[in-house]
Image 1 (tube, one colour):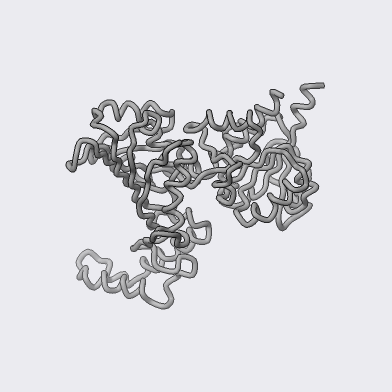
Image 2: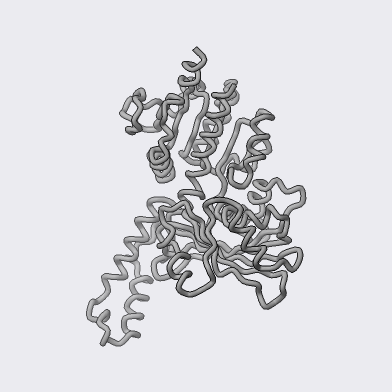
Length: 380
């Protein structure tokens, strides 16, 4: 009978058809997470009664994602539906007395006092303590913050970091599927300039002027980005906050310190920039260490932190091969390269890191948190 109760754990999935949700389901299928240890229920905001995804386990017809009674029947709710959905549904569900696990890829609850930002290779002990203390809201972190900590968590674990500056190069996918499609349309518009100008014998300045004219023209597709991204960049992500920062830049110091559970805040700041890559965020990092630590010890700390970080030798050949969005797209690995001491002082470190923000920056932490929550409930 105990085994039957374990099998009958109910997990509700919301937002499983969107970009992050699709990556989540793909990862769960790859890892065989739908193993019969719980019953999956799929919720929808638009197709109640329809057929859910094929996950190898029979599931009921799609349920109403706004039906508090149906959601309250779940032991765990995992949502990738976005912040607006969370803000509307989560308070009603808690007010109704529901005490299940809420696992969320959106940012709405991240900085709430009673929520834990999840990145278990970095803060598993905090997650475990939270479960013991009765915390029920577990939220995926900001994509660049999570990827930075996956790459450089070893330095923070050692207590070596005095401050950090992160200059980000963020992919179109961070803004959503519509933006990814718009980037491709922008690329197509640029590629469609006079083919004669693209001949190697043509005057390159004529080609440059034609491309620039296309990008500045009224027909250039930019309804979503508000500016050209292909062949350019956008040095602004999210809304403005205090002191000239954008919210995306503020998240670095706020979320990183919350994930690390630092009693004294480590200053982290920088500029977040959108670039014309489809997927994967990159970061150029300047790190002020508390002392002059030998580079060999730094390398060992980075490599030894988790099984996904990869230290890329600081050579042109290795950098071109391994340290780019093209090399990392679709992979769980988080390469760290261009690692060196800076000439402004032996306590200053520079490096560059890349990671797939749809994996470690979005879907993977909540996938792993679901497994942690299921294991906890099965053990009760």
